[in-house]
Length: 129
Image 1 (cartoon, rainbow, N blue to C red):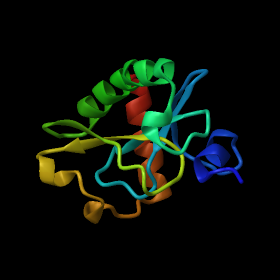
Image 2: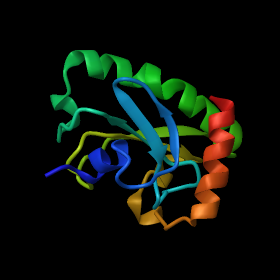
Image 3: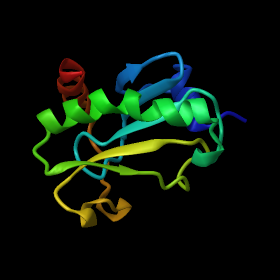
Image 4: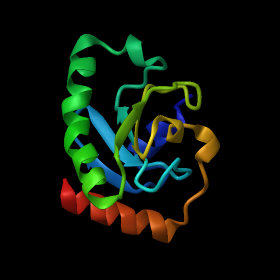
């Protein structure tokens, strides 16, 4: 059975897409830890992040870099933190989260976002990419 991320990538479930290339798909988390929280997902459905082949592992950061830079320009934050938790969805993914400090990288801070808030945020981040 396809993961929810595969269904998002295939367009079966709507999302606020930020960027896409042949290997990766980036979209806003609907339950963000902070506004601008973006998920970077490989298009190949592999459960564990470090089971990705070396080519994907070596290209995920260059794909994420302009997105993180755009998030930092749009969302007031000290920096964009990275997190690979891997327990929420059985599909490898990287979280880009605007943070002020290390304690901000916690799912305890996650709250559902409105569709309007996500659409406005996506527009701003895309403009910065």
